[in-house]
Every structure is written in C-alpha cells, then in structure tokens.
Length: 83
Image (cartoon, rainbow, N blue to C red; front, side, top):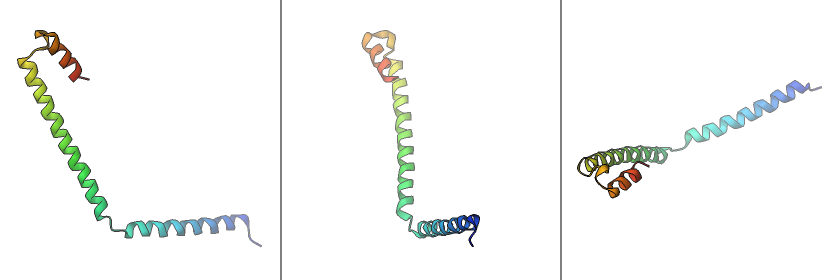
C-alpha cells in the first residue's frame, strides 16, 4: 500500500531531478556569446551616458550665449529641450 504522502514525495523527487538536469544543461552551455552581448549592452550604456553628458554641456553653453530671456525662439528651444 502506497501512502499519499510518499507518492507526493516521489513526484517531487522526480520533478527535482528534471529541474537538476535542465539546470545542468543550462550550465553546460557555452555562454560566451551571451556574455559578449552583456558586454555590448554595458558599452552602449556607457556611450549613451557620455552622449547625454555632452548634450547637457552643450545646452548649458548655448544658454550662456543665447539666454532664454533674449528671444521667444530661445524660450521655445529651452522649454522643448528640458522635456
């Protein structure tokens, strides 16, 4: 006679074995290209941060020589560029 708890434990052990084999297959994969992609995303992030910084510096420099109070066009541009 099989007790209900034992059958449940057998099923859980069976599922655990499946999960272990799936995990082993994942860990056995060559992840070189995946890590290269991760590195590319980090590089893109750094490049975009640098570009944003340069744009911010350019906007500050432009505001120094073309203050928003000087013309409606300047006001419109700086209002648009702060969105």
